[in-house]
Image 1: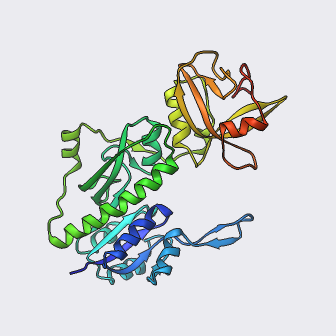
Image 2: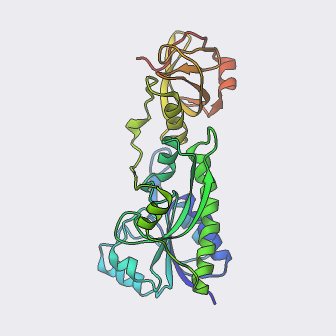
Image 3: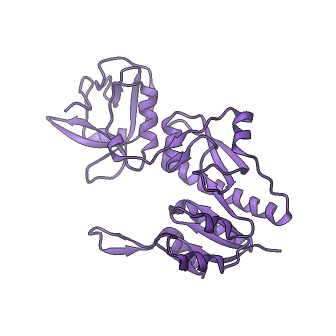
Length: 319
């Protein structure tokens, strides 16, 4: 027996899960994704989402409503008579009528160890906070924000100097495997759920809100603790990209910092302690490992320094 599934997702993160559901032989009644957005150098070209591109490649019915405020959209969704809806980074609020329409409700693939990091940016906030581990969870959606009961969990360590982009790709693969397992158990009638209050009591993980990343957060201040500064750099890579100013000769230049690692060292915050971009912080020092100059490509620090040395004693981050 296969399940009749509605898939709802938008970014590249959701594509492996869509592929896994399709490969498992489930009937995908429709794919919902956000409408094409303007992109390109001049912002004039309408570009479909990665999920829409993949769904069309697979020959699936694609639907792109702006929202579910229109009663006709809710009626059309209910008419699909789905067994279950699978939601992975869709990006639209689902009203109660949508959550209740499928026979088994809506299952969400969420990139954190709930109840920690509910909300919009769980992957980035876990790295920024210095969490040692994170993971994917399959939960049943309800009206609250990521508050539904959890069915399956897959934990994974956060690597030293691992960026959000790297963790994003790894969790996307984990999500696909976990959701395929969830659907297999749902078919067999063995998928069970644990309330998040029970999860908190069992694991000690308290609810924390993962607020959306604001570009204003990306400016680095080296007065803080090196461990947390390095974590923020890695959390904001590749987007929005933490930045600071670095002196190249007589000119200071704004540079994105895409990877970093905390190390030992002391000095006035922002002072370079060697000629390999070790920057003193309020506590400890941070090694800048990967950078991107304006208009350039991401480069390892040693490659950038070959053509543009920055000697010890230089100061980064000051105006």
